[in-house]
Image (cartoon, rainbow, N blue to C red):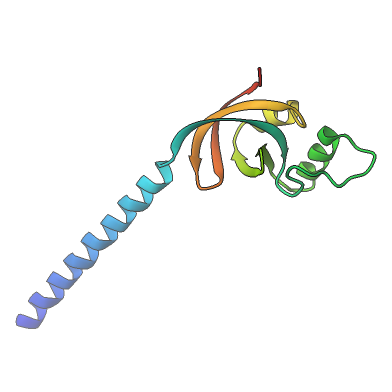
Length: 117
């Protein structure tokens, strides 16, 4: 009888711990600081320095993205990965834009993309 009670309490503790871990993970996914960044649209591999000779920065960016690389935003020496709004990034490849979204580590969950003023 005492062993069954200890098992029940252990299972309850494990359940509560699992729920708490799930909740913390869910909150972390929604976390991120609202930010506005202005930089140049590039791709994740080239960053600020495009290596394709004879191609514009826009053409190199589009080619690398078609090859499976993601878009990126170059702000000074920093390269941010971006998620969302891929049509806007394609439109503004190689150009300076202002991006609004949630920044978490080096990734921006993009809410809007506008040409920089």
